Image 1 (cartoon, helix red, strand yellow):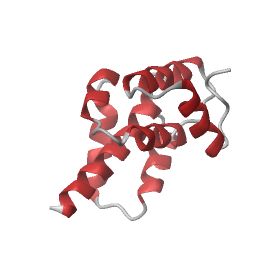
Image 2: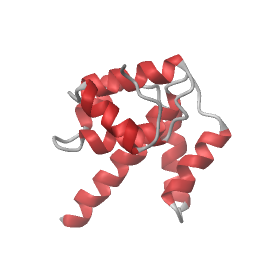
Image 3: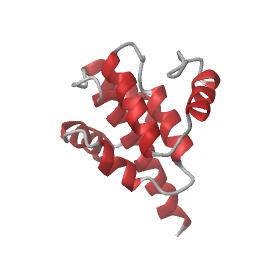
Image 4: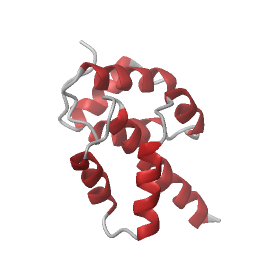
Length: 122
């Protein structure tokens, strides 16, 4: 049972990175490689899963609903790590994600500080 929880959590974190990468409208080869790189040694099945997730349309609300209680901060941090946060759509995605996960602006800025990312809220 522990394995499946860990597996579900890992899948959730991968989806967090992929959705963040999709937030600017497309996932380029570099972003795909970055995501696969964070996974370490991957099987063909895992590569296929990542590519399949990349091809799905971005649905922030459905993703937020799939996040178990208590994992919001981790999911948000993984999403932030997948971004360069250099575009307005990325910032809007993070804002939408934070709201969906019920993260306060202070909590969000704390995560940004910890990861050395530009603050989302001033």
